Image 1 (cartoon, rainbow, N blue to C red):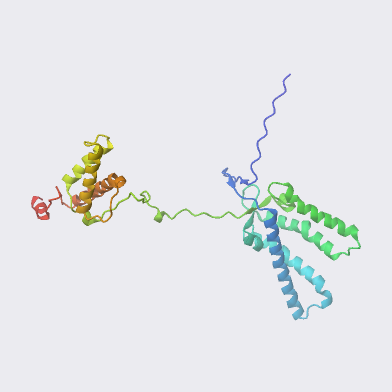
Image 2: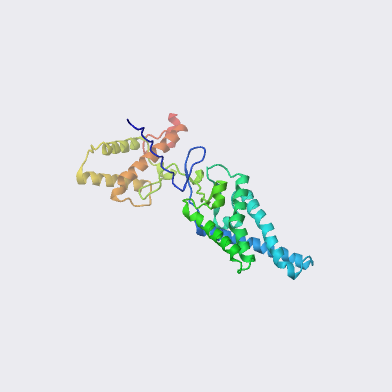
Length: 308
């Protein structure tokens, strides 16, 4: 009797991979415990400062007395803290002021957009995980370990939860279906207007001005074309030192004729001739569109007008 083979288990996706409904994986860096703790401390300082400010206002208006400052301070801290976390993450799409400063944010575990109820749940769970047990530890007398010790153990346990899962999710994230990532840095593509259709310039690129291309006509262009064709087809009509000397003489004659200012080295001669041929041919074709035909370097504008 053969037992049916078990299907191999699908490999779990990497912790930094987010798979949205479109099916295209996105890789996001998971926020570590340290940066999240720094963001949490920043948010606590913000809410504490706001609570103290309200307490000072109440004291200035004689709405409280020094005997009740402690209780009112705890109450203000709670009243300000809960809406602060929930409303800021709703308004800034998963970020509080502390998270914005640390460049981290909350995202949905399934890759979908964040839901309001998920943000509410994760922040209310923060009260049960940290703030309420911490309040008990601070308020209750240390002589009553029956209450303070369980609260302290609970706080330590909840703080250790992110260390035992790959995406560093605390209890609130596990229940709400969220986790925290480093904010991706946008990388903008180069502006299309700055892109060049030509290859980048190198030392072997040459450019010619219009007046430098007015010295030659179709005959010289055809002669230069034959020279280049012979070289590219590997059938030069001269070889060895004689061919190199001829090439050097042609380049030097063109350079002096058009008054080209830069010297042309030996390894740049063919590139110079190819660039000059392309520029000269485009120049002659453009002139021809306007009815001007240059037969050779002895071209005369008056002759062109008479023949046309």
